[in-house]
Image (cartoon, rainbow, N blue to C red; front, side, top):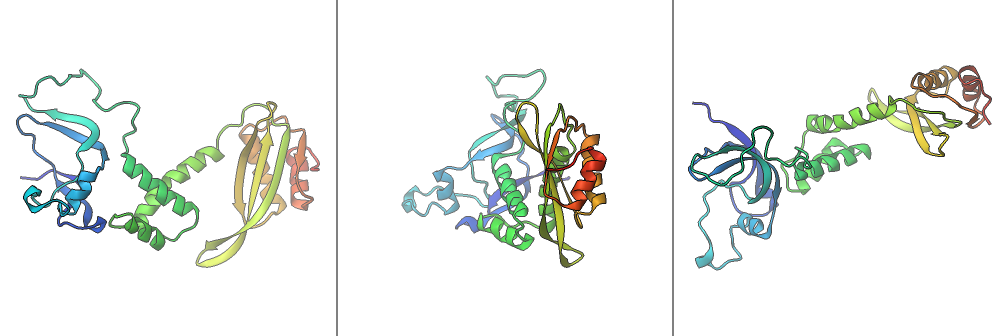
Length: 260
């Protein structure tokens, strides 16, 4: 018979944070008088710290017997999956779940860890250093593929931002570039990052787009400005930039304007 499993943080021995293991564990079988809950968030309290340490701060006579492995955490929030027949007084739902709509499915702790990893990724920290950071937080570590998967969410958000429709008129447009170092095919090279910032008729300023390329050549600027037009850029009356020849030629061709 196949044993159903779930993910859980368990203790196989007592000690510090390093004894916590995130692993597969047998899914509990529903017994009389019980409710089976799919956990989405757990509150960790001082009694859980004492449990992790084996209640060593308590007098021996007060130390309860603990069967290992065990799962710490008793304050939980989640979805009721099943209810034993003898349980009374639990509200029934014809459809939907018991999970509050204002809570997101991802657990709070998992969201916090994901935010830490994504922030480290944005700042250019190596995968090895991210792994060390996760271990310092008491976890078992994180692989390169896991970092890539978690940071893939950032790619989706950035893609949505850079491809959003531009509504209304944008009379003022700033365009400029800076150069940064990046790794390509095992080499460190310098690339151009071009940015467009606009101010609309309501006086609101927004970053409209950015793009990375080998240089500030005219064809690169031309395609960049045309991509803004395709997304709905209109009503430009003043273009502000430096005197780069590629910018001036592209702005004249695409926006019919001479940059100041």
